[in-house]
Amino acid sequence: MVKIVIVGAVAGGATVASQIRYYDKAAEIIVFEQDDMMSYSACGMPYYIGGEITDADDLIAATPEKFKKEKNIDVHLKHRVISINRDKKTVEVLNLETQQSVEESYEVLILSPGGTPIIPKTPGLESTKMFTLRNFSDMEKIHHYINTEQPKSCVIVGAGFIGLEMAENLVNLGMSVSIVEKSQQVMNIMDADSSDLVEKELLNHGVKLFKGNFITKVDGANLELDLGEKLQADFILMSVGVSPSTELAENAQLTIGETRGIVTNEYLQTNDASIYAIGDAAENIDFITGDAKRVPLAWPAHRQAHIVARHITGDNIPFKGLLGTSICKVFTQSVASTGLNEKTLTDRKMNFESLTQTSLSNAGYYPDHEKLFLKIHYDSQTRKVLGAQVVGGKGVDKRIDVLSTAIYAGLTMDDLQALELAYAPPYSSPKDPVNMAGYKAK
Ligand code: FAD
Image 1 (cartoon, helix red, strand yellow):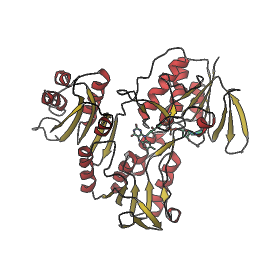
Image 2: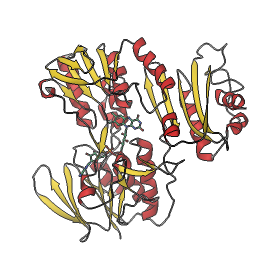
Image 3: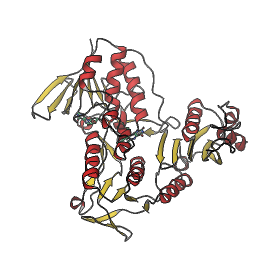
Image 4: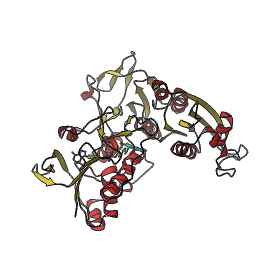
């Protein structure tokens, strides 16, 4: 009977524990989680704060009691793994309630520790109300603050996924929202023309944007920006990114890569074959280029968890790499991308062409059609699809998923014409926007 210890009990950790149990009824599985909650949907948290989801419990998928009863998995909350002894194959675990530490042995160790929000060193930041949103208790704190203090304004620092989702949810609560973003565009994984559409949507909903800018000084509710503007905010939401939690791994001399994640092979093993790393803290490769890549999103954590479970239980399925497929709702618009963007293609000096296509999501005579903007990058010689972005009001998810599948399957722009895609007037047109892009590329 193999003994498996897992660090982290949310997306990657809880999933890998369940998956191992599915394939191995006998394994001893012990999970340590430093927080007081396991297996919840972090992705749903902005929508609980915004009131779209009314019961926080709906975000919780499992409890330690449920895991024990239904899967015979031991989950210890409020237990932090503080060191790994690779020679002895043990971890030291600190019980955060009693402050006692214990040693736990393992045959296989799986690290899924996620990341920690980055907080810039801004003078005066301690003088104001500031939140980050990473875990369940962050969410509860923000929710409680909003409901008791009734703030009227917020400055969000960082215009990535969390910043944009929170902007929408706070505006929906009636707040005045400003976003301060260091780069020259919001959502900087997108190309500029795609992100322009997102900016328009934010402005249309009254969000004030301060791009190429950052906070230089905070004094209570008063904020000063690098380009001279002065803002007032009841609170700040800091969402400038997450740094992978690699301290445990580093201290155990596991290799850290160029993306600052824990380097893993195709089976998610680190440089120590008995230690795996998955999720936000793990570095893998880009599906197309093979370059080092880390995608801090839920799909990689879940897919990697499956591959690790299969590998441990004797079935070797190599992880083929990451496309970074993502989607985000910004008021009435959805913004999605997959594969390589213009910047990466240009930096790598790849030979590519790009095509943009603005179409309707579905039949123009059907009442609720909306505009869809598609941008596709493809290899100039092989014509294989290398990357795509879709922004629009309806049907963005369908198109980005077709295009992500096209990249996975190695399809060319000409194949896009030939795809037989579902059509009826409420959903598409006889020539879907993806087909149209294929025809246009010819
Ligand atoms: P986590 O799920 O963060 O779990 C790591 C856990 O490990 C944490 O609970 C941490 O406390 C624990 N831990 C760390 N160190 C130790 C230690 N030493 N000992 C014990 N425990 C430890 N992704 C999407 O794809 N789509 C979305 O819409 C989306 N929305 C999001 C919205 C928000 C607000 C947030 C915060 C994230 C969102 N994500 C989304 C990202 C997604 O939630 C993460 O990519 C995913 O949770 C990563 O899984 P993980 O297991 O690597 O880390």
